[in-house]
Image 1 (cartoon, rainbow, N blue to C red):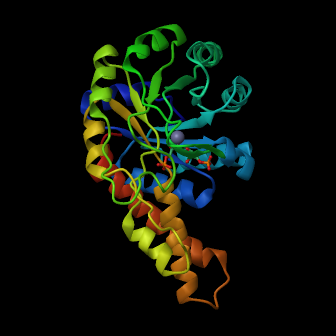
Image 2 (tube, rainbow, N blue to C red):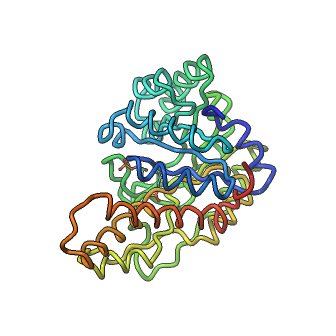
Length: 312
Ligand code: G3H
Ligand code: 13P
Ligand code: ZN
């Protein structure tokens, strides 16, 4: 199967009560770990690339790695998506460069400006057979070197979504209901609670429309412990409870973004490897267990959190 857009995926996910996993990719091992888990679990998948990933690994290398995954995993549909596109030019460069989906994130701009830039991306993308995710509301946390302080974050206002979607023509909408980017999402001791009332009101106003959740890592304490035990210092790293993500996936949320969890699995595993094998220096030896642990983590997300195993 060639790369696909998310249109059919989201239709099936919406009606099937599950969400498709959107995992960030930065190198070969991460692409392999994610797509092997998806192939074995027969799950559709969205591989997403941030501006930072393009700066780190180079656009062409990332596209070719994803194309290799498409060849290796012909049974599953794979979307290549731009995560947090910051301008029309970035989106255009990905549309021209082989992506099947882009996000234009103008959520920090005033409402009308967000609409204007999103509309411009949608027109260009749709002319080229590419779909567009847009965002309304502001998540807390760090994304692409931009840090949004908790007090500047705000939930999506449901009364704005119909006008936004109608005027922009976007294909899916990322909303802010209490998720947050990075590994430090909530203050230790507080009880994370997503605003399902906002999600339900948004969905009531946008029937059958696919909703996206960013900042949805659960920050597995097993890996936080591993990082801390083997020389790291990540005190108070807390994520979104998996049951709440499962619930969101059963509603109108069709795409759930997970990145930090995979980073933690990789870093924890490599730290442990070096602590236990101080004499080793072959990258293949420490990247292999890291890749294996990311794969198992992705499998767990597909089966127990997203509900998309067997849906390819
Ligand atoms: O939301 C952002 C993703 O986790 C990508 O992070 O900008 O560090 O590549 P990055
Ligand atoms: P996390 O930092 O929670 O993994 O969020 C990833 C994300 O939203 C990518 O766009
Ligand atoms: Zn994000």
